[in-house]
Length: 364
Image (tube, rainbow, N blue to C red; front, side, top):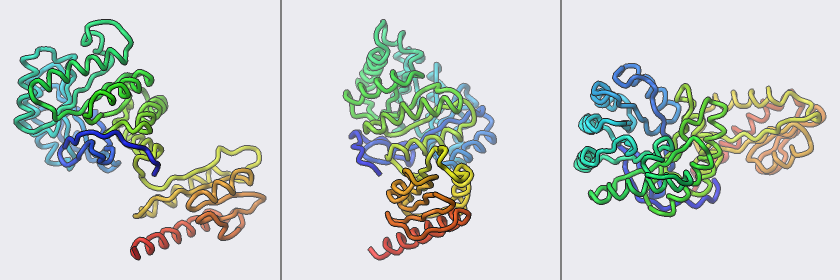
């Protein structure tokens, strides 16, 4: 883990998951089923949960979808967030159905009296609200022109004033744009103006390859700044991919760790082995273990230039060269083997390291 200094925020509880106050940055995703199709939605929620999702959001576009929240929540084993647009009655129905949080965009729920009814109902049930402002609605909400981050922040401040005047502060905030720079600037500005927990993400980031790059840049930059209490990676397609990407972003930023971290070189003409195939084999072997305890950093390096240094810096590693492979653990070479034996010996070294770490932990 690195030394990222997290922004201090107030705590908001979403079902059994706490946001802010130093609690772990949680992973969210959203189903893309028709919510009223309860069986299909529950099946997708289970897939998301198995992948590591910690909070799930469902769209509520009609009264049938609102009513479906109760059985979905019962089966989910995850906090369920109702995503509401336009119709305040759907927000009220979702609250009555037991949603753990509701998400609204004040840009498309503009009648203050109707919005007040939603706020008051959520307050009575102690259900938090996410104020989710997207760039697509910012110009009309802010009532003018200007730099997009400033306009979005102004829109959020106006919304906050409305909620706070009604005594409601059980809030999570998001200010998302499809543009990475705008998104990052919005969150940085907002983080200096309040202590509400922030739901971080780049909206409409695109298909898998593009969306992961944009999300990694935007979410990663903010996490390294210490900004963000829960994240959602928005990708077009299977939402399970959002969860996989979110876990990798959190791990890469050092904010949380999920499994071992494999370091491997991009290869060049010096590499005398099929390193890509070797890395895949190592990954497959590690997947069989399902280990507990502290994740390891594992280096798989293809030649003698940077290989020994990277392998020595990792918890366990291997560096290839001249048809041989040096196995490292704790910064030192433990053995040198034929390249054909390297993966087997590396896996054995990893298992030995885990055993040693487990014994040391039990001895403390």
